[in-house]
Length: 281
Ligand code: ADE
Image (cartoon, rainbow, N blue to C red; front, side):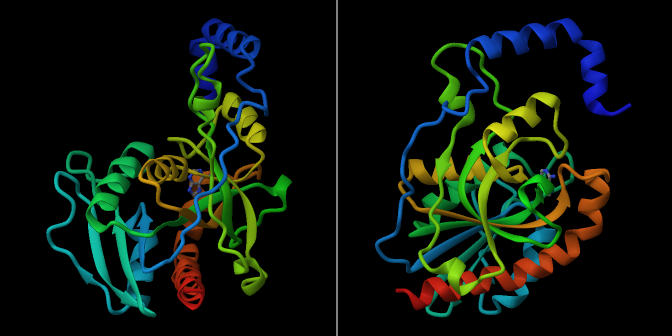
C-alpha cells in the first residue's frame, strides 16, 4: 500500500477535519504569499555552492579541480567542505555529509538549513548557489534532464491551520536569476521550486505544489533560501530533473536510475553558471 493510502486509512477523520479547517482558513489560497523581491548581489567574488548529496556534488568537484577539502569542516555537522578558486571566483562547495547515527546522506530541510547557516557564517559568501537534483512536472512542460533556474522557492508540506500563519507556511522566497543567464543558456528553464521533507507527496502536498505554481520539486531549496535571506545573501538555485512528479513511474525508481546522469549534468551546468557570474563582475 502506498504511504498516501496508508495515512488516509489510519486517520481518515482527522485528515478530513484538518483539511476542512485549513480550507476555511484559506491555507490553499494562492494569494498567501509575501511579495519580497529577490536580493541581488552588488559584486560576486565568493560563491558558496550548497549540494545535499555527495552523489550530486562529487562529479562537480572533479570539474572544479582547484578546490581542496577544508578538513576542519563545520563544527558539529557531518558536512564536507571544499574551497578554492575557479575563474577568479572564490568558490566553496559544501555537501551535507552522512548522518552520524543513520549512516545515510543527510537530506531535507533541517540538514539543509543548519549546514547553510554554518557555511554562511564561516565563508561569508556574496552569493549562495543551491545545486541539486529534483522532480519535474509534465504539466509544466518538464522532462528528465531539464536544467531549471529557480525564480522563487516555497514549501508545500508546512501546515499550520492557525490564522496568521498562511504566508509563513508557504514561506515563499524570491530567488535571484542572474540577468542574461537564460539568454546565455537557452536550453535552461525558469520555474518555481517547491520544497518538502519527502520524496513522495500526499494529496494535500499536491494541492499546495499546484498553489505554488511549481515546476520543480525537491527537499532543500526553501530552507536554504530562508537562511540566505536572513543573512542578506542573494540566493540562486539550479536543479536538474531526475524524475517526473506527475508521471506514471515510482519516483524512487526514476530518481535512482537518473541520478548519475543528472549529477553529470550538474558538473557542466554549475561551472557554466560560475563562468557567467565571473564574466559579469
Ligand atoms: N529529488 C529528486 N527528485 C525528487 C522528488 N521527486 N521529490 C523530492 N526530491 C527529489
